[in-house]
Image (cartoon, rainbow, N blue to C red; front, side, top):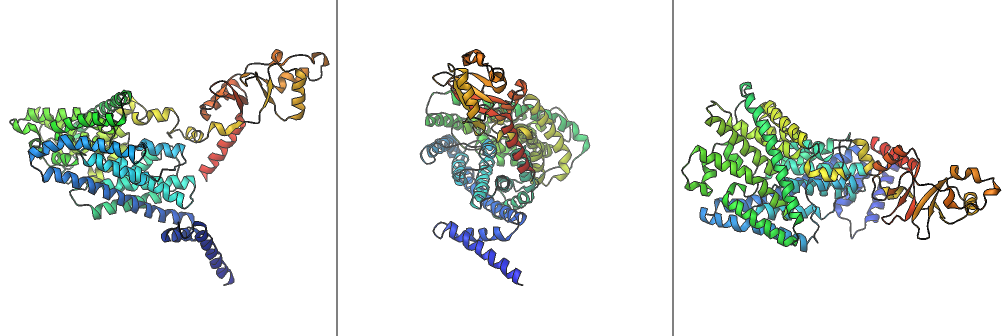
Length: 614
């Protein structure tokens, strides 16, 4: 009984200490309760509670964003006559990109790092610490961009928002890097789950994209976060806002050839999409104009494309639903093609042009200053591609073409090839269409598309530059751990230095008073000229006849030179190739900074590996 009372008293003291630590003026009541619960619950219990809270918050952010955008789109497409719609298609996309850019420049001080790459960078390079500003900045920017007709998706901004919520929650309660990364992923998972009302797809997204190269045994917080985000979406969003497809056919093995061909076409189109995206990004980056001028240029191009092809306006999910329901007439009637007699060739031409320009519309939306992602564009393009393929097959005389199924699996195929996320694509469509019996065609198309994309580029082109620079994690776990180490942390700035013109007797005195095995030889400006080791000077230590020998006569060139921008992995390769244990570090002007020891890097690596294995 006394022991039990003592535990209660100690728990109260911890609660009191936290209360005093965070202060009445800065601490919110719920934070005090959570700090108290953190001390009362074990690690697993607190992480599950955290997953629930992060999932609810991130899911609510997703619901708010979807509702805002849907309200704007609904007004334009259902409350406005066709002639006025055309006017809005010209004005709104331009305003959306320009306003987003202006807000970024004025309110957010030009800080507009966006997309999944931004989350991966924070995980690998910033200890999973995401700026608190991103908890709301992405919602504001993407709501304006996509709400006003930007041809992009809301899912990436929702994932970034959720990741920021999870990261800042973990920072508030002083959680470790592993726990912070887990809750960051949980927030992003909840955002994706709320966007599609697909919890399993959200979890697949976390493991397939966000946590690539990060080993985790705790996954329950991801599950509960995904469930919370999906439930909020299901409860609060209207049926027409949800990403749902009810019309489909039962799977028939006789139709496998259709899926094989569609998988190949999806993979090739995905490659076309990412190539156009890269070229547009390069084009916009090379322009020697201000960011606001770039936004105006991109806005003009996007508005023109939306004017000519209204399906390019916004996310495009309603258009895909029309394809799935066989309402191609409603899609055509909402464009200038309504004035052409409805012919099958005209539908094929219209869809071909939509697919061709979709890559340009999305790329100019994102890279001219808008905020959005490739989730929705890839799904829209895949659904359109599947519907176009079905129509062409019908025109060629094939009977009983599974049109609805081709639309659904086409979405999975394009998404798999564009985002390099086949599992996410498979489960997303299966959950959104209640089509678990479509797993076989979904796997066929998604895997073929993914393999084609990997054949062109082993790493997603959107992330390749960051991966090549070692700024994000990859599937190589050892490399990921080494990338967390910073070269500057291993430099021994207390290294011993001797002047080029010094005598060997001065070096002997340095050996007597120091404890180093290697010495840097520099000139009067501090520029590295050579190095010396104890092995180099040992023959002269007890020979008085060599007392007047100059350093320049016995020094040697270092087998390799390290710069501060070199990565630890590259440095270890230098050590291995030169069979040395100490190498000099210089700055951009070749001024000596210090030595790096191979053992110091290996020791830090082992400590990091131990931390990850616990």
